[in-house]
Image: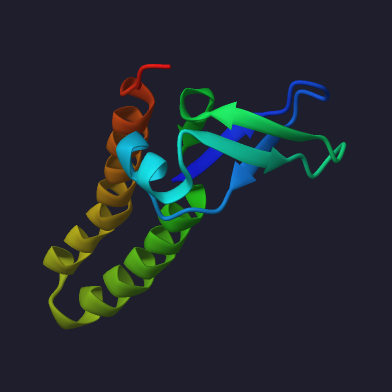
Length: 111
């Protein structure tokens, strides 16, 4: 999951680096007002924590799909058709990403 904010001058999305998965964790980590430097136009702004949104990080899903494909092919020769059940791994990763993004975006704090 990536946490991004939109620059008010150039309207590009700027990502912040954090390990927070919820808004309260983001407040504990960075505070309620977060200073953001736009990588596109160089504008420095302070954004409230509610101005940030979460978007899914598809790299995790792609990596899970590659691992699942390799695992399915290896298990197909060892266990047979039952080994192809590991193809469900990317679906589970995608579902976890979607629920984490939804939980972050649905919770708001008071200004």
